[in-house]
Structure formats: C-alpha cells, structure tokens
Length: 186
Image: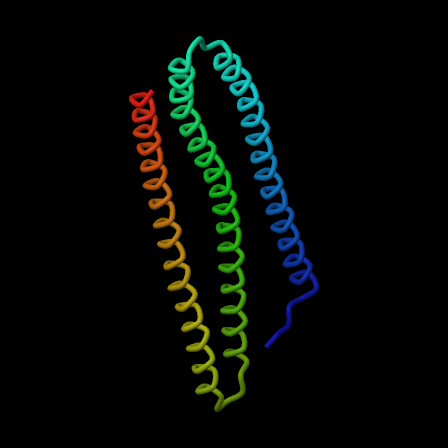
C-alpha cells in the first residue's frame, strides 16, 4: 500500500481549490442575477404604481375607479407569478450547477477510494483475502446506497418542479378568474 506522492497531494488540493472557486463564482453570479431581477422588478413596480395612481386619480366616478382597480389586479398577479418563476429559474440553475459539481467531486472521490482499495488489496499480506473482500463489499454497498439516495433526490427535485409548474398555472388561472369577477362586480 502506498501513500499519495507530494505531487498527487498538490494536484488534489489544486483541483479542490479550483472547484471551490468555480462554485463561489457561480454563487456570486446567481446572487447578481437575483439582485438584477429585484432591481428591475422594483423599477417596473414603481413606474406602474405611478401610472396606476395617476389613472385612478383621473377617474370621474366610483365605477370607473373600481373598474381600474379590477383591471390592475390581473396584470399584477401575472407579474408576481412571472417574478416567482424567474426567481425559481435562477435558484434552480444555481442548484443544478452545485449538484453537478458535487456529483463530479463524489465520482472523483469514489474513484480514488476504489484505486486505494485495489492497491491495498494487491499489497495485502497473504491470508487477508477475506478482510479485503469484505472491505470491497462494504465500499460497493456504500456506493450503491449513495446512488439510490442520489436517484431519489433527483426524482424529488423533478416532482417539486412539476408541482411548482402546476401551482403557478393554478394561481394564474385563479387570478384571471378573480379579475373577471371583480370587473363584473364593478
């Protein structure tokens, strides 16, 4: 059994730092996208609020005022849903990149462990075959368990995304119905 050489150790540390800096950059990019989305959303909300206030103040009677209010509800609800979808898309993209990076690191670690076990098995003293086989079996079982958990997590993420889409559609439909009802009442 041999220990890693200084060059191998340095290469592993360098790869780890590169992965860390890559993830840090991706996290920062996601934060910038969220900040830009929030600024644009606030800017649009202020402009639309100003326009809506001016139109509301210029209405001549209560019916006109209430009709304006009802007409404002649907676009506002749709914009809120669009904002939620944009936030979800940004966070989902960042999460996906983190997951890919983690998956890559785990695969590299699994390969390193497998290589270590194979080297240990080659250099094991005579009579230790049973212990080596048990160790290999434990490693294989751990990798199988990780794969099962990973698959379940991916399925859960897909289900969450499907549910998010369904909720968004239902909320949009409910907002449209509420707007129609408010217009009819006005």
